[in-house]
Amino acid sequence: MDSQSRCVLVTGFGPFRQHLVNSSWEAVKELSKLGLGMGTDLELRTLQLPVDYREVKERLTRIWEDFQPQFAVHVGVDTSAKVILLEQCGKNRGYLDTDIRGFRPEGGMCLPGGPEVMLSVVSMKEVCRCIAVEDVDVTFSGDAGRYVCDYTYYLSLHLGNRRAALIHVPSLSRWLPASLLGKALQVIIQKMLEESKVQAPSTEMPSE
Image (cartoon, rainbow, N blue to C red; front, side):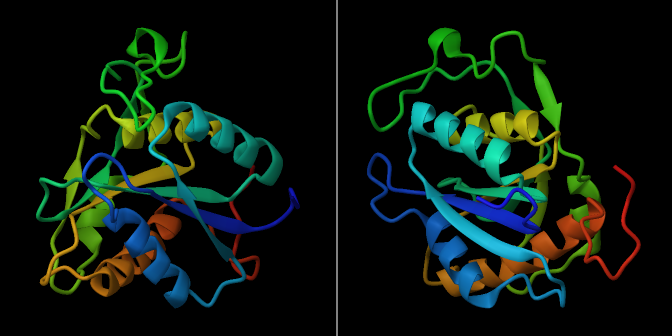
């Protein structure tokens, strides 16, 4: 992989439990058709992650060490939600539910010795305040649920120096098709990139 590549990584999740179609991945696929839509040279890369703690850890470690994306957005599904949730923080402990392979992290912990909570560089409250998405509400959340989504988020925040985000989308429905969720992701990610100061080279770049 090209470590100098300027890209934004967006991931969704595969099937789990009774959810044979995961709306997070369907939404990400729609986003991949739309692109970032920002008039920037940032490249959009998309990837499906399995609902598998060990596989997620292996893949994310490889991505952040070798590929070094400018920013990562992880999209998961909250089957009880009726709105899109922007998660502010990832939690280190409490992972007691098993994944698709019947595995759970030892001690229910993501990163032994890691901080209890990690926050994104992006203010999710500010993103929620500044955007409007057609036909679906977007709201702030401070609890990502302690399953593979939350685990993924915490790891990505750790590996990427907090340059990551987690978005929970509702299940697909007649009123919330994948096409609408994909467009919503585009609008939300545009604002997240603005908030995190990931910009095109033609604009003023933040110092490292």
